[in-house]
Length: 314
Image (cartoon, rainbow, N blue to C red; front, side):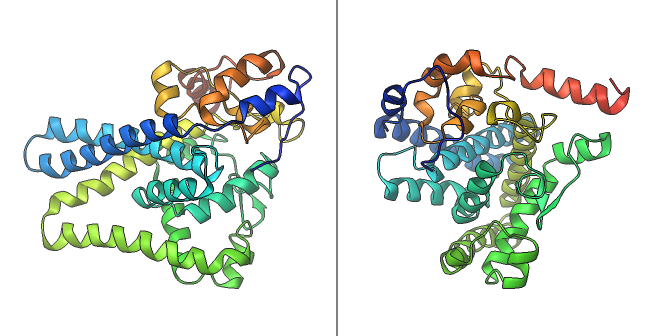
């Protein structure tokens, strides 16, 4: 995505040009580390199924956290900012999405629409369905807790992937998934079939070979619960109108979370200049931090704020 969605009075065009330079080495090292750990935790889940509940819980929680890192990596890849070449980014987006049931073409179509219509009810697919606004996930306690369970996010992805594999019928595309362009339909069908084939194979293994493989689906649900908790803070509770820095929240996160999530906590910075790769976002933050409208709030503070508002009303 080459568009910018904010013009900073503090940053020169020359500075931006310096920041958008890509770096294969940084992305390769992080991808290899995170994906290797993700696979290792998956093996641990299957192995520990009938061994130790403590070990199984540990492997499952780690698997869920690393799934979030794959989401962050896929996010960079669909922006073509993880690696230097478009082909490497496409491969990275495909592999990561294959691992947690999120076809890269669907993610790209949805996410680019989200960037162009950030937090606009009826237009932003993160807060809309079929072109109609959805009730905010933090509007009341039942909605909020249901969202944090990870079920809505996981089921939404499974639904999109299944409809995609069925050819993304035009009436479904127009009525439910208008953010998906008809031009990508053929590639979308093929990718969705591959994603479903992999996960149906795992389901088959869990039924006919060893039930420990079913633990991987529990791990994915745990990961989607973590991801739902993480992404809830990015725009919820902010205005639906105004500049991108007014509608987007950067998160105060510890170094471990920034590393795990490929610097996604610098969210307002990313929305302002999506072409800036993840490794340059800390530098971009230093350049525009005085212009950010929402900063300093971490995830615990955000969720405590939501719990207060949905229980005692303040």
